Length: 467
Ligand SMILES: [Cu+2]
Image 1 (cartoon, rainbow, N blue to C red):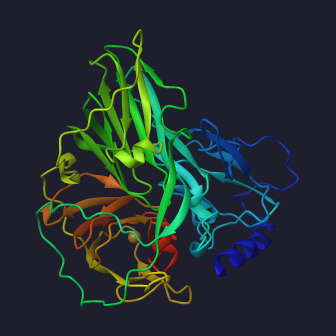
Image 2 (tube, rainbow, N blue to C red):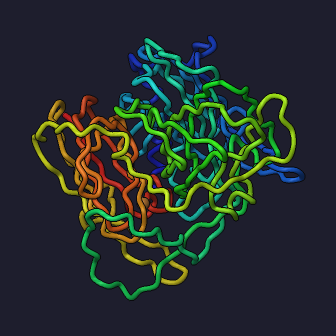
């Protein structure tokens, strides 16, 4: 549990004067206050979850900020363990990024820290705990410590009539030996399989309950819409470990932004696919009056709560689910440009590997043949230099990989070139290759990791240092 120790240790340094922080004696109200505390959440009829959340709700309250306008942030921790609060998708200094590996400030058990934060870039971001729970499924992102952050751009086009934020979440995790079913072949180039590993696969995580905005399908208030409206939906996959799909019965969704960043070519889709921590903004024309289910096409998970009712004005009756057309292929390049991207200054290959954990054990994850070790020297990157990161996934698992404090541009997906799609998480499917370009602008330690909690905790991390 070295992460916890260092998080607590960091607080000692947090007490020394810093231009970025106001003195502890300052009791004025902060612009943003997050209180980390136990919460009881009624997620379904006669079903209450006991977890840890922000400000007494799961997900936490929507935090609306303005691009480039600094805010004071108060973090209170009412729990018995140190916490880390990560501003996912924002370009912020290491001190406030909330990752132990980057030596960010932690929030001590029953403690408080205050700092300044300049929100950037604009778009749908989020905030979540960055603690490593390892085998403890009552901590880290298995809890309700997450919430939307929306950074308003300086100029908001606002071509919609209503804005709705929807965050998905799984609850009551348990250990299982069952693996996710295989996806059908989507074509394109493949990575070579690794040498055969005869050790059985280690633990996977299953869940009993599912919610959108903290309510199981049919329990919460429906989203109320009117015929003729254009509704902007912001989706966030708040899962610790699951990559999900979402479909809106009777409607198609126009994807306008991914991970909060507008895409070059908005496209209509029947099914959204969101890896852990991915976001998508979609616009839907409300042109099919009725009472509908928006949810996962996986019947079991939808029955266990992963959906929400969309209700047109003056329409009543049981919500209808219509399965999307079969074999919908989610392809990032649909939304990209065909123009050529600049030649990178340097190419860095990152090969993802797996060592099976065996029955009752944990799988171990490697980048370029090594599990993360905090004693390793970080890989140096030069500010302003264009790097191409080539993700070679030589495992049969899908990995939603995330880079802190920077966005990257997708340049190649499964052998298909693309441009103009800016993201901070990308889902690299089993035995696939994705290439992204990043030009670091923020100095200091920058963490790269798989956002699947179990993968991250058991080795799937790499530390860069930008100078
Ligand atoms: Cu992973």
